[in-house]
Image (tube, rainbow, N blue to C red; front, side, top):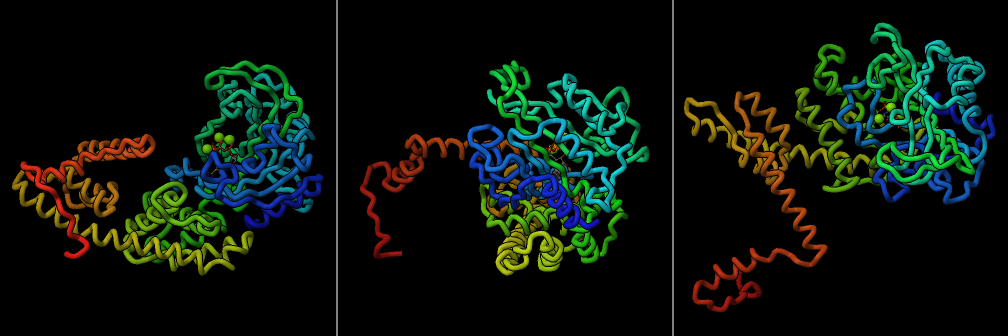
Length: 480
Ligand code: ATP
Ligand code: MG
Ligand code: MG
Ligand code: MG
């Protein structure tokens, strides 16, 4: 089943259960406290917190999401994309735990002919709060094997906003991929980081009013007057199960990009673990870049633009590590466009603009890499000449200059140095980086407080005017 079809099934199923269907909001979060839309609930926060009345009692969506906290996981776990789609159903004062559990079970295990996904119910495991008797009852009643209900503590399974207000337990659905992926869960643990039990759907029960406290150590003051349901199911995770793949990078919406990248580099996906990670990173990041630029993000040195810049640069770096030094996005981005435009036609209609931004950023970084590589070679030659017989070490200052002046990332310096049998004084580099960060912070503070550090101007003035305090005359208007 194609990913786009699963997405449509979700919407059709919840429409048939009287949910209003709302479109995804952009990746640029409508909530100003976060950079990106990180979950399906983001556009509904005021209804979940109860600060506004929801226009519908029940609603469903498939929300585009970006999670930068997962960037290092990409390609290494089977289940983390920087871009992914979260399918959600929500109830604001309408159905609660039992209703949400019945819907989840029916959609996951219902026959494909009648609109469900046809997953094997015997492979489903659910983690719940150990005091949540209502969920336990409902799960057994719908057909979940009682041995597959795992009871967790409040620390492990509670949702809250970090402040007094609504809070409540979750019920998280996991799919058992089978014994070839690890040992069977024992003693009531479903290893959420492991490969065997894949978390596919989180039902959040917005049930209690909580008081003050650190972490999960707060009193529950009572039940909310109007309880809410907030759920999120990972479309790509479900797609990889239904498509019989090993991970979410191998699904129909991503894999053709990986195949093309492999072809361009002359490598074969599946032949080498590290190459595979790089290819999966490329598959993921190309798609994230496409969707981010599509939603109006442009590369820059801070905020959202910096995230996009990192995604493009990591793509370029990964291609380079696979041996491709030329621009690859003109080959890869159109493939991603063709895959994603099934569900998001705007990435096709707006492609010229998207491509211009993406290719421009790739070209700029390739130029940086070329210039940086020349400087790097020069630096290494000098270091080698100075070292004689001793081991060649690139100093912290040299690594820092490559980074600071030529935009040459430290991981690249480390890698290229290693290739040449040269080591890098990474500790000294980190110290210089920290000093630079401290200076930037002091500058930002100075800007805020108005106490700028003007000592450099005073020093310049003194050195120009000499010891005798001769006046300094500015001649820049008439002379160069
Ligand atoms: P995990 O523990 O696997 O990192 P999570 O607990 O952080 O997932 P939730 O915040 O509960 O995820 O989000 C709801 C659902 O969204 C998850 O059950 C999963 O199916 C999906 N999901 C979350 N993060 C990602 C991601 N980075 N890529 C793809 N799907 C994701
Ligand atoms: Mg996570
Ligand atoms: Mg989790
Ligand atoms: Mg979760």
